[in-house]
Amino acid sequence: MLIPPAARRYYARSALLAKYAADEAAKRPQQAADVVARFQVMEAHYAEAATAVLVDTAPDATLVAASFTSERREVATTLSRASTDAQFRAIVASLVTDAARAAQSVSTATRPRTGWVRLLAPPSCSRCAVLAGRVYRYSTGFQRHPGCDCVMIPASLAGARALVPDVEGLARSGQITDLSKADRRAIEDGADLGRVINVRRDGAGLRESGRVLYRADRMTPEAIYRSTSTREEALGLLQANGYIR
Picture 1 (cartoon, one colour):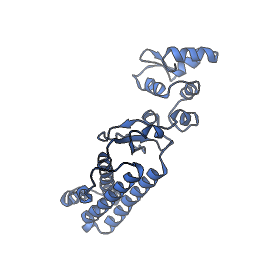
Picture 2: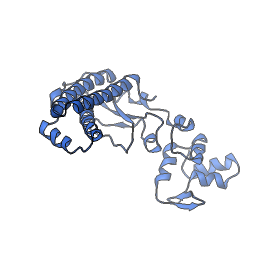
Picture 3: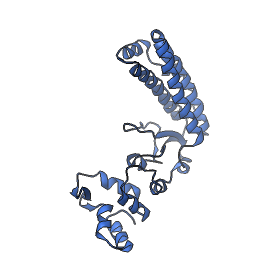
Picture 4: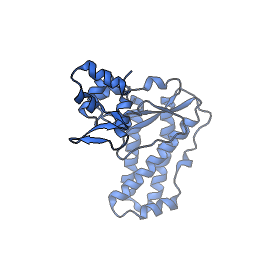
């Protein structure tokens, strides 16, 4: 399962609110801090409502939406550093989006036995693929890389397993963007995606004809397929190198 429709709608509307805030603030730069605060409150209310839809667990407390607004003087100071209209808009959108994330985090924390599940918005990179479906405590931050479009959605710890995606299926269908042909073939032959990705990330490795053959004294899938002539031999080496069991 990928991003549930309710979560997809929430993130789309949250992004739209951030865009509206940037547009309005650009038209009225002297009142930009007030615009930011108003949209931050809107995001907080919407985040709480969306969390209630995504998690069927009653909260022990409710949010105070105004607490997610930025201090107006700090907003004005930050915006004064923008040298272009694009930078100005980006700062406004970021401030509003940050408020939404904070509000959703707090709304999640108010619900007992609730945490976060990291989900993909494919096509995705392998770094994100190996983290897909991982369950985090409510207090765990969301680590991203530049350009990452993954999401962390609130979910009851009991129901989180239902949200784990078929990452191997995504890899086989070409939705994991940075896998080599050998990586994809290893996965098709039953290799564990996490092991395939992790061995590619370990160390510099030895290279032959521009291809990595070993990492951390372990054969890569590329090396295995180049050194075997039958599927049985390949499977044997995949197992011996810890890719399958």
